[in-house]
Length: 145
Image 1 (tube, one colour):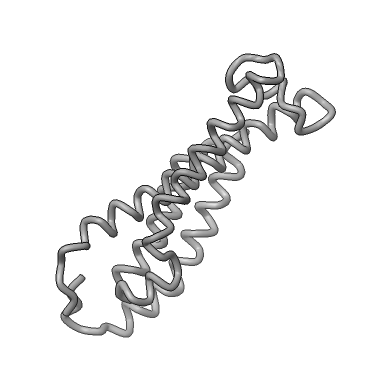
Image 2 (cartoon, one colour):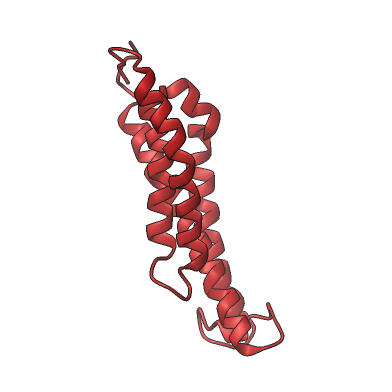
């Protein structure tokens, strides 16, 4: 990405705001199973925090935070967490994504809560990794200045 000038105000503000965006993204993911939000919205917020730092501080510092080589493996891991939760329920006698069949806790309401939390975490991880990978792919051919 071309950087015409190094603006210290933009660098400072983005460095201060990005951790709060990332923290709020985690909050949305981990509270999405019983309140508005969830994996997709939280993953989008996590990607926005990472991309904000890449835009303001440059690709070199952004690569230290989240290397682009992790995009595909982390998105695959997120999909596997989602699919693995559903498959575990299916193999344990329930239907696909029937969280009551997954033995994560003793009580059924807790099993359902932990199951949807696992699914939301998997979706959040996959969405974040894919969005950052798309951003990195769009910048692949652009020369650094």
